[in-house]
Image 1 (cartoon, rainbow, N blue to C red):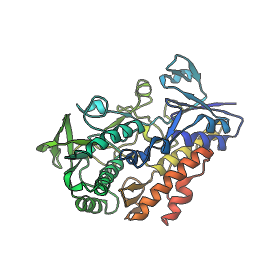
Image 2 (cartoon, rainbow, N blue to C red):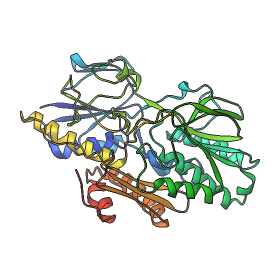
Image 3 (cartoon, rainbow, N blue to C red):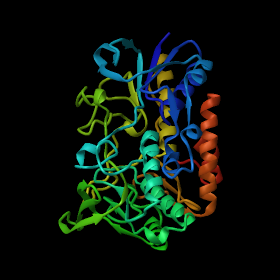
Image 4 (cartoon, rainbow, N blue to C red):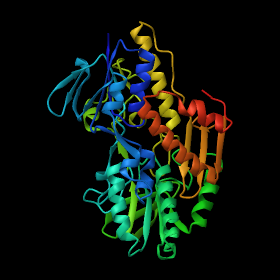
Length: 424
């Protein structure tokens, strides 16, 4: 009997626990270690930031649901990893031994890399966590009483640009509903080399489509932007050309701002060093989701190391979308099963990107297969159906997690609905 430990219980970690139980059976022990005892559906945070969702709509306590699958939950942070000893040290000083470890922690939010950034002592808001989104909504309620300039975007090194576009356009929709859109000049500030790059080198005509969407919503933009510092009511932005040279310095006033930070690895993972992680603290994995040195350590989701799709004048990272994470989880479950049976790993994750991006009352769906160009499929569509699909996705995923199901959502439903066959 083996003990499989999963660090993290987000949209990668919690599905992994259920998938492992279904694939490995009941004869092995599975433990989930997470800093909170609640699951939170992170993709809905932009809706929380305008009050279209509340915490109770997108979170739930996990212990009871995991117990039904005979999965143990430890709700406290890991303070230290000892991979040579197959041991995790928890915040209270206790130790957890494992036979196989799956790191699914998500990222650490690197607000400290830009002076004045972030909701903790800084001057900008975030939708990266539900706590942040709730704080953003509290400030939003005050902002709409006395509106002014609004800045939304993603700083240098960010790798998840979709939520920035979503939040900007959701804010614009909410302001129109309140009939105060005319009182709010909006600017989108991004490290992307062009609008619609998305960290993917563009998908289909994402550049033209997203530029058109921002124009129609009267949102100005600054690309190739490096945010040098943020002060109360003012953002300092260095705009670069294609050679990476500064061509303009902006001092942008704002009364409210939501800026996504760069990501890096969480502290206990990063402290293990270069055998486990890259310089940013993201976990190194091979094609089978295993760490090259410690073959009993796997990793899935946002915390794994993936190189940028291309070099950009201002650093941009590569996003990890739902389909990618789902395929990483599935591959890991099968490869651990192989290892338990004395076999070599043979299942690889699918490096394709699929995203449903809400824009308030409409939305954009994009598919990039493979993620790095040239692609077999490069597809992007806009319509109200995307907004409805994202609402349905939220409700389906949360219900799926409560049921303890490992059903492959993207494989079974999303690709089929889009009329796209699975591509490796």
